[in-house]
Amino acid sequence: MLKILNMKNLLFCFFVSVNFVGFAQDSTINYPDYTLTIEGIVNKGLTIVSGEEGVERDWEAFRMLFDPKAQISVVNHDSLGNAVHQVYSLGQFVRLGMKFYETDGFIEYEISSIIEEYNGLATVFQGYYAKELDYEEKGVNSYQLFFDGSRWWITSLIWTSDRNGIQLPKKYDGPLK
Image (cartoon, rainbow, N blue to C red; front, side, top):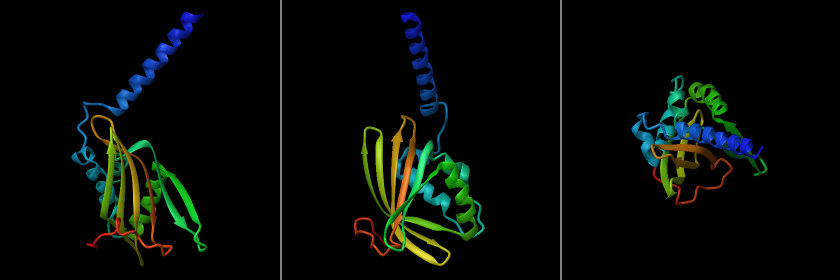
């Protein structure tokens, strides 16, 4: 009985490791250059979501920036100033993006960036400026990323804006383009 359990554990570990290595470190894939740097991958995301009203976005390229299990979330504030956290899967966010970003037009670009990196992990606090329809805002995007030996992957993105009247801290603010 012990030999059977050990064999099952061994087979389980083997299949998990093969699947992980196959997903995370496929050296036969030539990834786009922008996935090779932290700055490249986070700014490519802004480039993809930005565009004029009625312009279709490259949502497949957007998906390729993220780990398939990534979460994308926003912290908005209600009329009393209370934080309201909304979480989306990658698929949910893309569906919403197709509906709102492409229909209304949306422009977003980086105004500052603070990157912390250690041993294949990175966090980026990115000050941004955004414009959609009749509003403009500044805010902070916070990205968490990992490097799999071949490229960077975004594992989560959360952001908040100054819409509730809380001014963007100077370290995240920058000149508007």
